Every structure is written in C-alpha cells, then in structure tokens.
Image 1 (cartoon, rainbow, N blue to C red):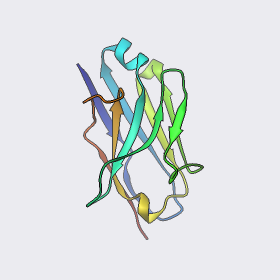
Image 2: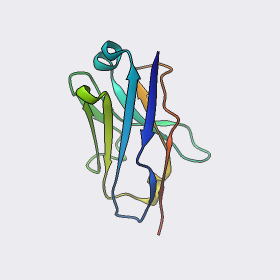
Image 3: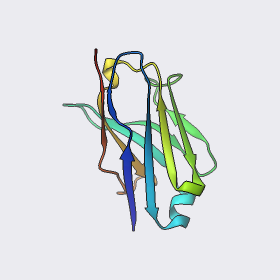
Image 4: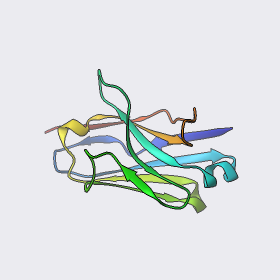
Length: 116
C-alpha cells in the first residue's frame, strides 16, 4: 500500500513561482523503483500529464511547461517535487502526484491558482 500527499499549492500572480511537493509513504522498494509524475486537471478539462521522472532520473515534460517547470525526486525522502516558474493563468488547475505508470496511486491533489 502506498499513500501520496501533495503540498505547496496556492494563489500566485502571473510570472510567479511555486514549488509543489509529493510525499510518498509505504513500500520503499515500490517507491524507489517506479516513475513519479505530476498531472493536472483544470475545470472542465481532462487530467493531463505535466511532468514525470523515472527511477533513474530521466525526465519528460508536456510541451506547455517545457522550460518553465522542473521535476525532481529525492529517494532518501520518498519525495518528488515540481518547481514551477513563469506561471501563467492557464496553469491554474488541481495538481496531482502519481506513483507508477498506469497505477492507481494518486494523491488527493493541491490547488494552484494563477491570477492577478
């Protein structure tokens, strides 16, 4: 059993920055060996993958966030992070952490609102 808890969301002005954190608990081996990813879902839209990072630190980003967002992980802390810079109003969404490709391990989400 794995649990994920996101934090770090909030209200920020356009051009600002936020850093999201995802704390994982449960099977250390499962956490350590699986891809961690951030998804987001805006009102009325489908959930989309924002960024992912494998157990060997290979990263992948959605085109819409390339050059602005950076995903990282700290295996010693069972955590993943999403540094978001140059935020835009269209980045407004609930952001979710997911552990494992095609898994059902999701966090509860954290709201990010970009508005002036």
